[in-house]
Length: 326
Ligand code: NAX
Image (tube, rainbow, N blue to C red; front, side, top):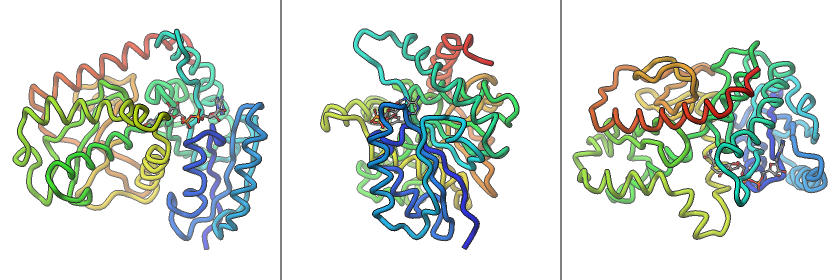
């Protein structure tokens, strides 16, 4: 059995937290031979609820759970963390403008970025789930000047998984038959679910569906799936979001299969003409705990326009929070 690793989770008493912690502790994220110590951050009023979650974690008697540290102090939660899943965020309240939401979250992700900078492992893997995920990840990264910016990522994997599942349904196949879709850009309604490089049972996806369905049904349905879940369930996606977070971290830590990629929100580096300065969804392969952008994919005019639109939104979000950068 390996030495335990430290996994920090924020918003641990929330609904995604409740769907996430038990799967991390059971080995779904890092494998059946990797013990974990959970370092759980909540705001002070939620510590009672968090205690209940910890009691349940203990009651599972998970063989891989090597310890639990519940706290309301980010400096404790991120101490020596090897992995950090930033789930807790400020929800949008009635009457709140997008700019107010961005700023309110800056008040959370700035200090958390600094605490990660000061206390976490030097090659910590950070995944931001709390919305607006890409820009929250950027704020955290900009407040962690001592860490490689590549330590900071945002979750677009739920959108990626939704896209695979909806394409499988349309083509009468299983989601495991669908390979290499891409979510470009922001985890928001401007995201671009790209099927130009996707295959279904080895066949190009766009030979199996018509462009009208792709452009006018598929893309908006993937973009709006979060709102559809809220309408049906009366609450936002939780178990599927937790599952996508597990997938994101597992791919990053344990690698992607040869010839396959996943979508990750990562610092833009000029690839595909997305200038540095935002956290942008890219197709990535992972190996030995590192990710790399898949290069050389052909981008047509249809894709270019959608990739630029989501980039534009991210840069607007960035300009609303720039003053929060360290
Ligand atoms: P909940 O409101 O159930 O839980 C959030 C938890 O975070 C609460 O327990 C709260 O006390 C805690 N919290 C708030 N501020 C905190 C802070 N400063 N430090 C530590 N904990 C803090 O929300 P939940 O449904 O779990 O969703 C969490 C976040 O995920 C939301 O921002 C949501 O918008 C976002 N989502 C992101 C998705 C993605 O694909 N990137 C999809 C699902 C989800 O909508």
